[in-house]
Length: 81
Ligand SMILES: [Zn+2]
Image (cartoon, rainbow, N blue to C red; front, side):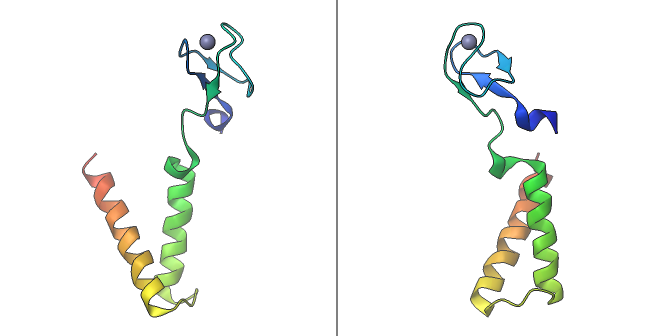
C-alpha cells in the first residue's frame, strides 16, 4: 500500500515519501499510521485469532483466553466507530 510508504512532517504537516526529513522545510518526519493500527495488522491478528479458536494453533489455555479476549474487544472498538 502506498500509504505505508508515506511520512508526515512534524513541522509543516506535509506528506512525503522521504524517510529522513521533509523536502519542504527539512523538519523531522514521522509515520502517520503506526503499524499496530494499520488494517493489515488487524486482519492478520484476526486471522491468527480464528486459527487459535479453531484449534489450528495450539496455545496454553491462559494465552488462548487472552488472545480471544483481545480479538473480541478489537471488534467492539470497530463497532463504536
Ligand atoms: Zn515540513
